Length: 388
Length: 210
Image 1 (cartoon, rainbow over the protein chains, first blue to last red):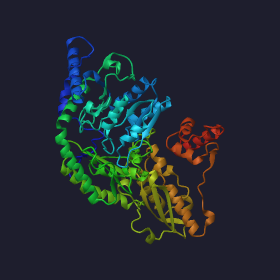
Image 2: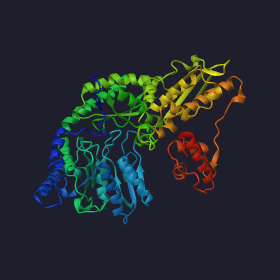
Image 3: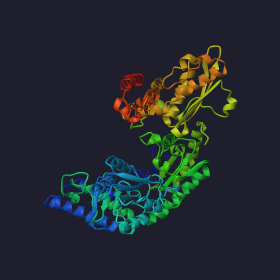
Image 4: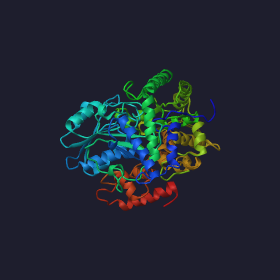
């Protein structure tokens, strides 16, 4: 193997920027520095680019440009959706329904709201990592003011049945939010078909820039801002706009949606090749999540009897970037809440390994991985006293 | 190298060396190895588990061989490996000395570990003590066995000194932080003084500061 050439298999963490996206952004990082709120020519040119970007995103989402709010990223969009809708509607009720496998950008604001006197129901998922829409419906009460269920899970890639949940919420007139950050490059983003009233997406998972996100807020939804200080983004998200980032995000979303179908077919083939390859070569492994209702680029396996961080470091040394749900890699002492929510014991979560493929991933990269991984697993199992 | 926030997992060269080339691993069937003492600590559910086998030189009362297996992260593997070297180098460590090895000493030999790694991954000293105790038991030296006892400090919430020790090792180094972590002293609060003293003691013991 060429030295120092890393094979990047962590696209669910973040993606490299598409050179075309960078090119689209460059003018706004350089000469086109105007503030879109001002009235002279350079500012109006920035304003025009901002409007175009907003229209582009709105077209892909099937909404009006006014319903697009640009933010600083997925985490802010999720926070704005959860905190903003809950606080603006608190007089109608103080109950929220979400699931146990949401991203922390949804779960942590929910936990924070519990301290403010809200009640949150965290619905269980099934063994395959998919929530049963009937259980979400059953959790909804008279005083429910928000339902939030992610479109596709970031760790195990499971695609959630948000259509049926959306239809139910629409009938009951309850705002329904979905975090679509992981789904944006692979799935249909039309908010009318999805029946969502709020949708989060960001640039950094679709070969766009980091530090920029979108919250779609359907007309008529009551939402309270998190910050104050200007007229931008209909006062829901004031502050001088990140023009370069927004232009980049719009370009990235356009590219992603254009190549979506072709790329999905290619990635699904590679994904299933890798899953089968690991299952064939390594004993005592299990696929986390659903084999079919799964993002085209997500492979998440638990490798029993060994711990994820040790695996990642050995893989890194061998030239592969991946991620794990082990506690040691989480920044806290707890292993992945998603794997635990599948009903798996802690030791399975500690041994989970995620490979997320991307547009530059080739079959030969996976062949190299399949050559190296069994040896690493053998080595670590040889020094492990655990035999699950 | 030690990161107070525990956010980074930057490892020293020594850690890397012992992680990629661990020393004294027990290969093959443990039964056939014929150890004089066996000890283990942790569980895979906690994310770390280690098992240690020792052979004792009965004449000199020193450790002749120290073999191990570990389920855990890089620092768990490296710290057990370095401990096995410490226990057997220079003709072998005396059992009395080996009973007193601290996580701090192991960390020093590794040129430091991130704070939050110390508590969860440096368990080798406990596994080694368990193995030596097992040897004492098997060789009829029961009077030499030293049990690790936990003392209840906060009676209302039943928080032990071990839990406070672990909280300090995780980087919770003030009364407020330890309280948030362990819920100690949240009922009557009568233990506050004793707990503050313990925090001071553990900070001194593990981090060399008050």
